[in-house]
Amino acid sequence: QVQLAESGGGLVQPGGSLRLSCAASGFPFSWYAMSWYRQAPGKERELVAAIASAGYSTNYADSVKGRFTISRDNAKNTVYLQMNSLKPEDTAVYYCNVDSSVFRKYWGQGTQVTVSS
Image (cartoon, rainbow, N blue to C red; front, side, top):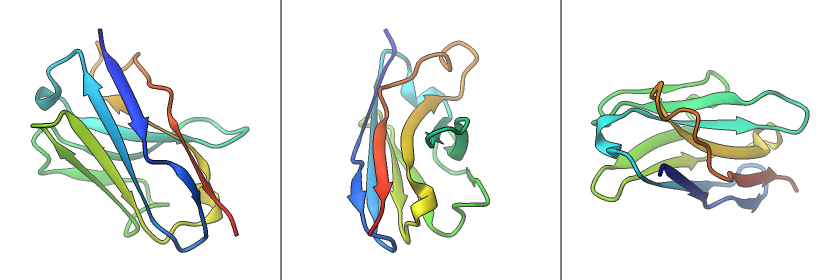
């Protein structure tokens, strides 16, 4: 069974940093690209960042380019999102997801990120 467990969220002041983690299990993690999404209250879920299976290629939403960095450790079946220079508009629940037509239906519980002074 596919399981995705996000962690690392919290309350941070504008300009601060957080590092999110997503521990994955139940599928061959190293075979698949992984993504981070976020959903703010009253808004649709949006793609934040993606990383290829081997980690050599990454993509970012324009709103987070230069501030967020996605990475992965295939030995630990974990994908990370380093978030720097956080803004209030980054406040959302953050989720990881598998870039696969078979596994993309699985979502974890998400981790809340709140950026506020």
